[in-house]
Length: 418
Image (tube, rainbow, N blue to C red; front, side, top):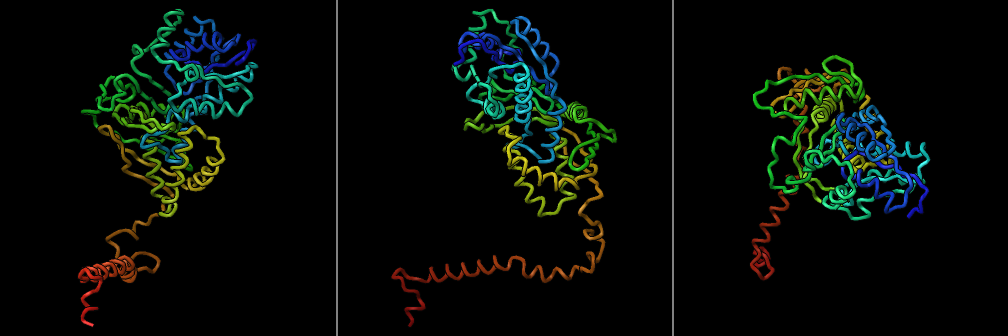
């Protein structure tokens, strides 16, 4: 434990966990000064207002770092890797290392001796933050985890100390919002049998009765650059698609998620833009990549997604995987039209100068294939196709017949005749 005369930089949101951490870092850990750092990765404005008001009430020096562009670029990199975890687009997982790096930079600039977060010992975020921070010389502190705090204890402590805690929705849910996704967990949602009310959703509307909408997504070397012909920066592009796709209820996930520590938790997510972009990108890859590239890239994408989920975006393996992803995505340039309707989206059109596709070769209206290849040439292939399987089945069938012919003495009928 530090013996005082030190400064700690706290990942600060102004919520219950990080608010109670401020006095605890002084009372329990002996720090003389705590500074709060809030990193902007696309949260709603009211969260910054809450953080600023709470920091002021606590007398806390408060720093706000804008990392929206950096985070948005990482999200579009994740699209190139078709990144998801157990079926949902990575959101919080990608944001945490960006936030951690920004907090560390402020801590170093301000001459801090330590960094701290308000994560529990049951979740993933503690690991994602500390994977970044433990590469520094600063002390890493996790009061909620180390002191075994519960939400009930924190509320009582906050009331006892007169801390300016804004529960938000009565503290009913734990909500994390960034540019790429919005997660909702806690309260009655912890029961997997509970059917969530529609009021837990904010980004996605009930799609009932809405007309379908088409949207064109343009990619350059695997990265989305334009929507309906309009060039957009990464932040603007994601924001626009969140609004348009969310209006159709696109991008809801209700799942049982396996956390890194082995716990299984019920999570609800909203991710409209991510769903549209991942759908469009995968459709374009299907047009321009060979079958072998697509098959192997699925393995690479899965590994990248695992590292992304773990918050290890700077790991050597991640960089090596990205080398392959970037190489294949050099040809992922073109336009995909996505249809958004009834809470779903699907690619309905795609075009690229790099398409590994020949309309005449595939057409049923053309007699031959291409390059001197005729339909009759497939006859030899058809004869060999499945040959080994057929042979194996015949051998197995023969063996079974001989086994049935055995009368129990271990001697087959053919052997008795001899």
